[in-house]
Amino acid sequence: MRHIIVEGNYLLLDYCRWRDLAGLFDATIAVASDIDELRRRLEARWARYGIAEAEMVRKVEENDLPNARLVISRSVEPEFRLAGDFERAQPKE
Image 1 (tube, rainbow, N blue to C red):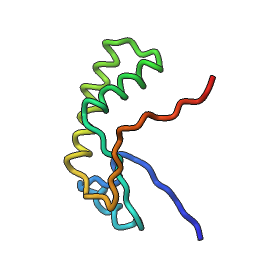
Image 2 (image 1 turned 90 degrees about the vertical axis):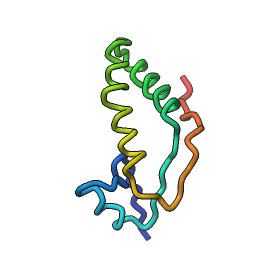
Image 3 (image 1 turned 60 degrees about the vertical axis):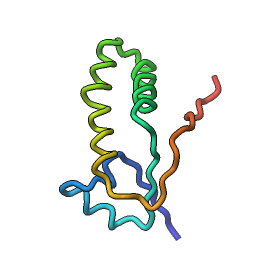
Image 4 (image 1 turned 45 degrees about the vertical axis):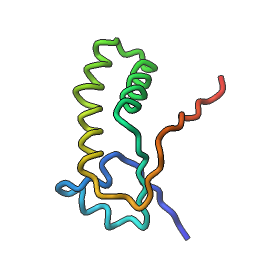
């Protein structure tokens, strides 16, 4: 038996052509996190890339968070919802 795991923010979006994808999956899972936690994680990610603070804020506030709000408000309900209050494991240096 083969399993294919597909990940992406828009895969359960109930909008235009995206809405047709949900029916193709045997199981759907969403990781839930509040906007403040998303903002913190996004800012930390851009900071790791060395993005200047003004550019980082612009990216987060004008692109990343509006997209997250769209996905949160316009996605079909997944079969499973995981709490996103965990930290991503970081490789040892």
